[in-house]
Structures are given as structure tokens and as C-alpha cells.
Length: 75
Image 1: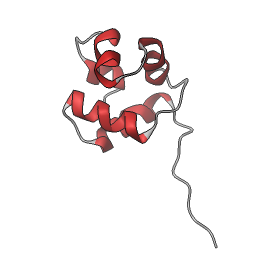
Image 2: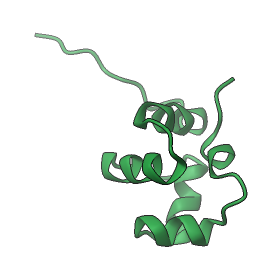
Image 3: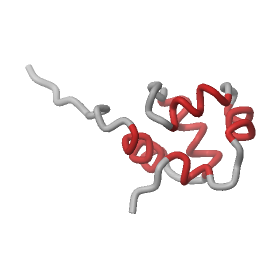
Image 4: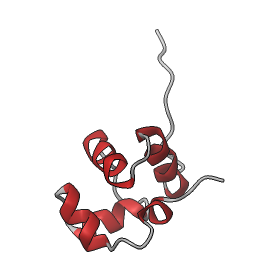
């Protein structure tokens, strides 16, 4: 079963995780709800804090932001 970013955060507070990765807790909350885009830099930092791969973070992010799809190159 895929976990959301909130599930991965576990019992850590938004404030704690946000401070650890250097963003505001409100910005982290918006990312968790899919209301803001997440940079690769933030994904890497979250993967380090949550001790999971970046792929797990990106899949969790897509639960709330399903419109974030990988495009295909044409040409």
C-alpha cells in the first residue's frame, strides 16, 4: 500500500520536519496536501529525514497531486 507524505512523517510534527529540511511548516503542509509543487531538493531532504528512497517520496507526493504525471518526449 502506498503511503502519503503525512503517513511517512509519522509522529513527527510539521514544525520539526520543516525545520530539519529548512522550509516553513506552512509550506510543508501545502506540499503534503498537494497544493504546492515539491522540488527535487526537498524530495531528497525528505527522503533523508524519513529514511526512504526518493522514489517513495515522489509516489507519496502523487497521492495528493495526481495531475503530476511524467510526460513523454516527442520529436
